[in-house]
Image (cartoon, rainbow, N blue to C red; front, side, top):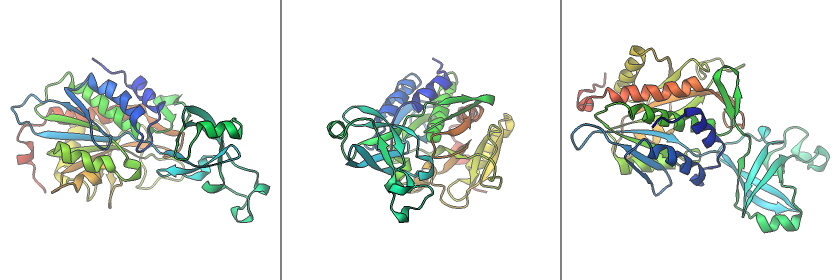
Length: 352
């Protein structure tokens, strides 16, 4: 069965699923991956695991594809006169918050909006510019006594912006970091459902990446892959960001190069991309990448890793923007690479 990529991605983008509270998005991914895999399970830390068995003799070598499904968001820290005070889950720039529509996940879901009090009501130390997080509030429209019946301290809050189709095959919305990469893994599994491949393929929608790479540290202990491919977003080029740390939007994926990356694996997947005319850019990663690749690499005695990046603009905002072509390219590159892996691939891999 073929998965229609854009509706699948939009469904994920319209679901909550903050770090540590991934259940809503995990069920959407499960519905898709159950159609494309042989076994599916949930780890003790909330990551989704799907196994697509290879055609080789048992025990087949294993490759793990890891894309985190959790999202940044907010958490209620206090209720004052019917307004909600909050803190962040994951990294959020307070400049983008005032005026944002949100959903408060209390005893029932409540629509709300982030508001900033007038400057004359703020203390002098708050200044007259962008208000810091402690001075922002969420308005739900309910009276104070009604809010207390629905919302509790500790309830999570997600962005409510629906995804928007832009010109040129681009898509904007919240939580594209990193559900576009989950969609790329879905696209890979979809292609592999019509291909022979000798290796077992383990797809992982990992949990809690935004708050500490939790799923990426724990899933490989259970799966024990021979090598892994992490998929995440990277910074797309825009005005004022034209150096080596950003990459063209819609012109291909990136392949990270640095200490977290096994150099021989990099050479092999780069050769596959060149052979198939799948455009990519080498992405310098001189330190810890901050992605699932780092966590997977250092588990147990070490796991060789690759990292594929999907260029994205306006990271950690409700209007993150990607090119759908790059999402499909990431999925196809993984599928082509995996379907060509010989059983003795790891024995012939040379660290040059």
